[in-house]
Amino acid sequence: MNETTSPPAGMPVMGLFERHLTLWVALCIVAGIALGQWLPGAFRAIGAMEVARVNLPVAVLVWLMIVPMLLKIDFGALRQVRAHWKGIGVTVFVNWAVKPFSMALLGALFVGHLFAPYLPADQIGSYIAGLIILAAAPCTAMVFVWSRLCGGEPHFTLSQVALNDVIMVFAFAPVVGLLLGGAAIAVPWATLVLSVLLYVAAPVVAAQWWRRRVLQAGGKAALARLLATLHPVSLAALLATLVLLFGFQGERILAQPLVIALLAVPIVIQVYFNSALAYLLNRRLGVAHCVAAPSALIGASNFFELAVAAAIGLFGLGSGAALATVVGVLVEVPVMLSVVRIVNATRGWYERRPGVVRCVCVESGA
Picture (spheres, rainbow, N blue to C red):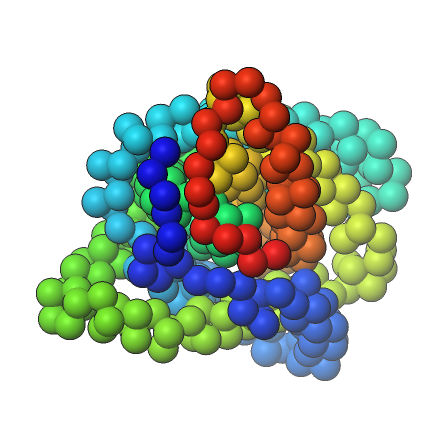
């Protein structure tokens, strides 16, 4: 395999904010709950700003989160899919044939049965729905960070993310609808399709049009400057969305503070299960470690911005589904960093298997 010495333009290293994202989410929980108690009228007014069941303030915030991330994606990278077809095949299999279904099973087991006595009975179905929505959205942005930290092959990561975005446009709604129906949860198909169009298809088209214009006008340097400018906007939009969600969820969380911890259990289990499955499948196929490591991470992480938006659109700002997707944000960074450490620590073991391809990869930053 060819040597790779530097990632493509736009592939970031983990910044201070991302390293402490869990802390920021925890602060948003406190701020949201407090503001929800102090300003209930303001939150009711925000919740009422809807058109066709789409909350307009949240829709704006989600676009501010998603579009800067999609600007990093070069769909021309799809030409590189053949070069890493085994690793990409494993990741697509785990993302779309395993992860949503394993999460539906874990949600039914833990939330529907084991933890049911400790959760609000009227929200159990909504919690399961949120977990399913979370698992059906493969990560788009943070995987660039995880790939960099594990010395991943950057062109594999870029082509895999581009392919996942294309698949998501067509597969997200059918997979979510199938699993919600299987869990005996009413599927608002019109709202689900609208969510895909509004939060996947339209941002992809808008971001690619914008990316092309910027590259034509100023090249990669101009794109890098734009991404640097938009990065804090995207993070601020994420934090504002979380404050809104916890403002609406405040009373329920105060009444049952164990809810967040209980919802985190199936999320953590599915991350470790799916990352291990992708990692071991790649090893069995003889895939190089610098492809297998990001494959495992992409196979396990979630596009929580899309999941949050879809859950709000389908079930509302104050729903258990919205809360369940936000718990995914809370656990994402510490759990994924632990997976990064595992794949880095086991590289020697991984490469001892006969037939595994060796490659000289980007040095790990973890």
